[in-house]
Length: 234
Image (cartoon, rainbow, N blue to C red; front, side):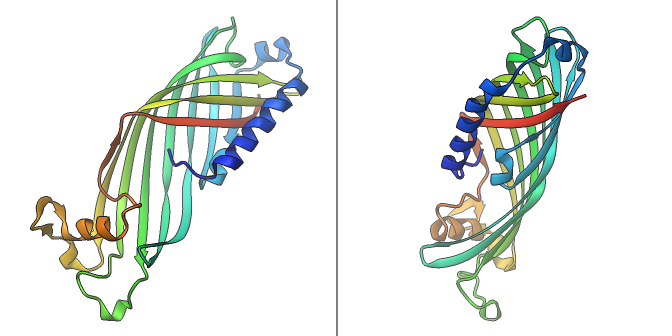
């Protein structure tokens, strides 16, 4: 998971924790509630616009289906090479929630999850004029990133007597695998590097010049997921 704007995220979570005292939970509402529609607030900071539907299935178990769009752009400078990066795609997440109380949808829960996202990224290397390209300078390219992640969350969901909900959660992603299919604007850069037959010339140069930006396939054994969702019952 991208680690961006941690101070903003922490502020949102602390604000929600303080607001929990204002929630007057009503078990009658919970017993008659079968669905909760919600949105994941910190995602807007990260350029992820997601919505979710939680469905009460059995007494202590519910299913939650999340999906949304990824749309983000950034500009930066690496080793005196300015660049632009545009990312567009979609994401989906399936959770099974096991609640500690005798009824689903309210209270503390544990939730394993599996997620999938596909993102089309466009990288523009602004360090040289496009009309004077050489195969070892301009590293502009497009790439398709596919990510699969697995993990589990520990959360707590509250339902206000008027039907509004707050869902706070955090937990580890025990598996996070990203594969990248890269195509450089300069065709010669797509050839295999003589130094490493598994890496293209472009990827090798990109790693040298834009080291903070990952472009290779990546596996993460352990990362962390945290957030807060606001919703409404029906």
